[in-house]
Length: 193
Length: 252
Image (cartoon, rainbow over all chains, first blue to last red; front, side):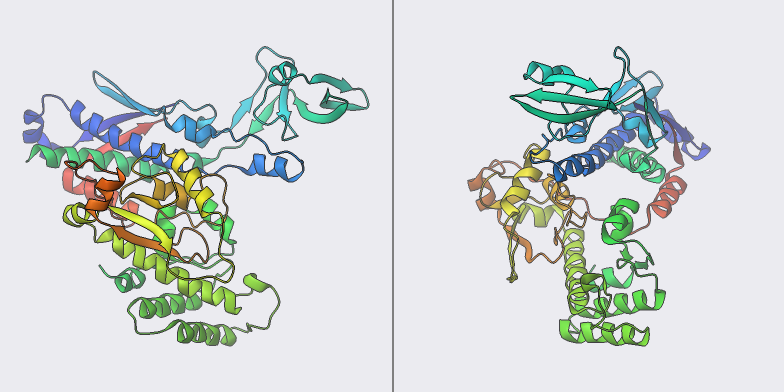
């Protein structure tokens, strides 16, 4: 996901504009600051509800994915002639701005983990770990797994999943514009030194 | 800016939400500038909390009298310490004690950060998180919290190991305050108290010791932590746009 940014300067800065070869420095400085703030925000997301819920009804602990924390490392700024953007390459993060509907791409159904064993593990991974996966006509929509004589309900099978917008995944609109403005103002102050 | 100043300028945030929902609903910056209490929508009571906590921060009132003042205000509202509900009872001793201690420690921490300058950071570049106040049932998981927070930020400016030492500007303080690793009793602040009722606080670590510990190189200068902004973000944005004549448009 990209947060694209445009800069507006009012007439009072005609003089300053003459000193700036282009306003790109301002854009870049603003975006660098925004990227840092977005990184910090994402790094501090504390989303463990799904894993905690699975752990609460299982005897084993789900493996932590650190989805947002790992993703935060990839946040960066992209600039080019007349544009700048903060790139947040984290799957699902665009849910900060809109609802998301997820549908299977190459499979018949989405496999939603309902057991801590299956959390952050694809069906293919579990098969490779020796789980034999099957479904039962008596419990449609559930994927079971069998290994070493043990049978567990592992996934709920869904044709699609709708996720509601969660604006708290990224800084709010004011915080985004404030970060950009703070970065740009720091850059302008630096020019004066 | 003193801790008492910080309490004085706080805004009131009446809410019917519980602690976890408050943290999920409001941005940290809003909570930092606000006086709030879980499931408490009474503005007069929040005003009383603000006033009492300002006097505690200024050293004009001790904890016992602070709790009594709050209890008396709640008694006028029909609450009693003997009501059921434990910590959810606004008049319970534990709840009042938690409010007074948490507000005092938070204001002191914000004042501590707000007063950092390149000079103070040069002399004392780091903080060590250590126990100041004993607790009858102290948390035993601080080492695991520290490890989880450190790993979440790649040990940026922080030391792994038994001593919880990190540069003042290290992001580990944010991670610790946000419960990195899944802890849910944190307050969302990058400063003590890092969890409800915690008796841990910051002790400064001098430059020589930071160099000896390997936190900074002998010729390296430590970064200054960003002071918490007590100006509402909307106001700061409008002021900067007005003063500098620039504004940004965002598409996502």
